[in-house]
Image 1 (cartoon, rainbow, N blue to C red):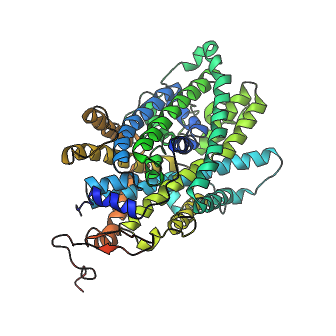
Image 2 (image 1 turned 90 degrees about the vertical axis):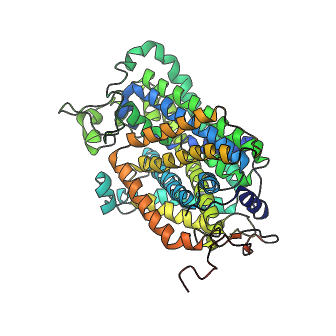
Length: 537
């Protein structure tokens, strides 16, 4: 379980069975921005306001700071090991197969559930837009049913039959990813331009209004700073743990390393550049929303704060009134613009979000397919999943499988806490990468590092500490789901991946002529059983 896959073998595999290299630094930055800017800022701003009030600005800073130190660790490993697989591949090379499996399994929460959450968020925007133009989709086709799993974790959601718009957008994205990386990146670039333009307009209109509405920032932390050891997930830290989802996706750049031209130079540029741009946007948008309209959390008649997203919150008389607080809106930024006298611009921003959110679904699914691709290539998942399409040169089988999984989750699960569930897996993966880069500095100090993390033994521990604190600040349901998910992953690994692992059998993939050629055997590891003998047969 602790066997590692040597870095030289990983790099050799990438060279012999590589995906098509077509992405440059600008495309990587756009990929990063496309993955990051989405549901978090367009949808979860109201959630952050209910948890932290104006203090959500500090929440954005905390979440961004944790991502920044994690990004520096990612950049060093991604430049050294420019292959698909992200945190999974790095963990395999440094900390062994068991840790790598757990990281890869946790990344399913990040990418697959994250993509499902964004698809459901997009569905809400699209349904609202269509309602505005007189086209009404039956309620039963816009939300999933209230099922046992959702009820156990979060009380479920008053239901329908299926979230059809979320399924449709997932299907479209899946087809686009099968067609090819270059085509996906081109569409993404256009959608990034839409999102950035919409947020820029919001900032230009709202930020100048801050000076005349400084009272909107008081009290700054109406629900306190939060206790990471509690199960409530409120306060500034609780909001940071939730809106961490707003930054999730920057590591998707590292999963594209195997399809990047000159990855040693371009991957660090894509990682750090996209994160810096998004952080600046988030702070300006949050400041503009608070200064122009206000972002105080809402209390119930019993004097206690409503839980974010609770049905009681939206059914309250305050939310039902005209000029309701920001926390009552499911399209926060557009709502702010409408309320401050710019209804047409607000509607245009809502339309922009509807147009642009699919790019986030695309990038999260893109990252998930590349994780699965490498895990299958290593034998921890069925090898047939790693098949590369002869025409499009994309991992088409695993892309279709991922599309089905994301569509099912989006169709039948409520959006509720999907963002928090996604964060639990992400934080685990980030901490693993930060630990791995420190270990590799000691165990393989002579290897060339095109990008070296500055002050590594300060930066990496800060990254790990930040991930642990934010994980603890999540609500209890999210932490419980992560523990259960990890336990299921261990069972699957011990029943399949442990026995079928290519490294266990001393096999490395070195196809010379065809990307679908079978792996070639090399000298087995000492003590490893021959293929077919792992169960005593």
